Length: 275
Image 1 (cartoon, one colour):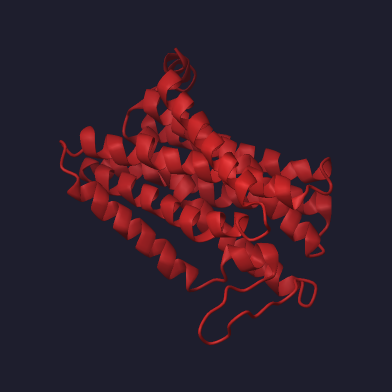
Image 2 (cartoon, rainbow, N blue to C red; image 1 turned 180 degrees about the vertical axis):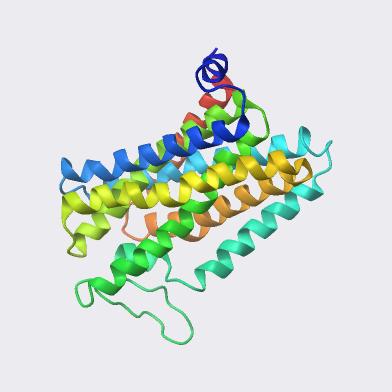
C-alpha cells in the first residue's frame, strides 16, 4: 500500500511527514508555475476550467479529508470543535482579505463593485509594480490553508488519509501556479524569473505551515479537530470568495462548472482508492 511505502521511506514521525507533504505541494506549485515557460499564452477559457478543477478538488478535500474525519474520528462525533474551526478559518481569511487586495483584482485588474466605488476598473498596465507586489501577498495568504491542511492531515497520524489530501492539494496547485504566473507575466514581469519565484514563494509559506500544522496537533491533540475545521473553513472561503467568482466573470461558466465537477470526482476517487 502507498501509506506503507510512505512510512518505509520517511519513517513514522508525523512532523517529518508534514515536511514531506509541504515539499510535495510546493513542488507541484512550482511545476504549475513553470508551465508558463512552454504554454506561453493559455486561453482564458482553459484557465477558468483549470481553476474550476482546483476548486472542485479543494471542495471535496475540505469535507472528505478534514471536516468529516475531524468530527467522526477526532472529536468523538461531536461536531462543535470542527464547526467552530470552520467558522474561525473563514473569519481569518475574511479579515485577512481586508488587509490586502482580493486575488480577483490582482488576477483581472477589475475591482468588485462596492457602495463607495461601483464598477471601478483599473488595468494592470497602469501601475505594474504595485499590483504585482500586492499580488504576492494575496496569493501567499490563500496558500496558507493548503499548507496547514496537509500538515494537520499528517499530524493526525492517519497517513492513509493524509496522502490523498496531499496529492489533491498538490494537483490543484498546478493550475493555481500557472494562473498566478500568467497574471504576473501579463503585468510585465520576466516569464522565466517569475515562474521560478512563484515556486519559491509558495514554498516559503506552504512548507513551514505544513510542518507547523503537524507539530501543533502532535503537541496538543485537543487542537486537532479545531485545526482540521480551520483549514477546511479557510479553503471553503477561498473557493467561494475568490475562485468561483473569478471563473464566472469571463463567459466560461459552463467550462468552470464542469472543471469543478471533475475536480470533485478526482478527489473522491483519490480518497476512496488511497484512503
